Length: 347
Image (cartoon, rainbow, N blue to C red):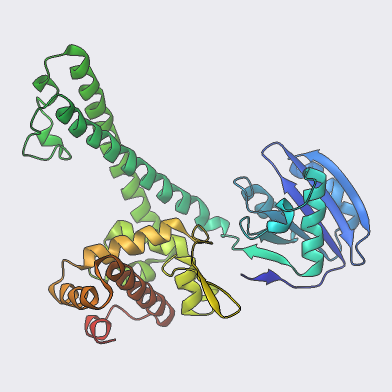
């Protein structure tokens, strides 16, 4: 957890929503200078803070609609701080809670140097990262539809055909295997949507490949040097990290990627690691874990995995391998060196 500790003359806390925003500005002594609920309008916000712009910092919680506010502050030369939503317990822990109180608490956390910060992803790559996440959503929807076709076969005690219907050439006549016209229509609709998603996903991947070569082609090919990391996984890891130097230590990166289990300790006693499991980047964890699974196709990595299974057990061994791969990716990007299999196996 990192806190924003820079000192300013004035602190602006914003409780941001889709259509409205509660704004509270306090001075260095904690006195409220302005407190108002306004519409999410850039001109209205700039007009409100105009008398207090000198040495002003703006803070808001990391909700889904923070993009425009961060871009506005960057364009106007204002310092902007994005608060980590899961760490900002003080906002939700009071007896009373409303937009005015939340805005004041954000400003107070800024003033006291106690606002836990989240990373403000740069605008030039943000849209491409979101597009890559949208592609993953579409791929999963496609998988749900294919699984529904398979489950429908089992519902009517039909043996699914041997060839995989994930391939377009194997979908001919699948719906006609069912006697009920309604079931035929259900399966046909599923396969039609899958066919449409095939075209959409393919077009998305071609667009993303062109974009990554503009943004950071060198890091893309560095990641491709890892066995098991293809184009999609390389792009996912690259865009979710953005800048590896924002992680001072490899431990910080492993924690952000959810590759380690958070521990709790009090009075010298460990109380388990149940808390904090959702803090971190779920997309980055998926990409690194998927790459670790695909690495097992390499014979030498499979031998390493067998040793890990004997030492840690089957369930924990995969997590250890993913953690090891995550640390390797961190140092690869930091030192700008391709993957070294011998060093990976020997470490």
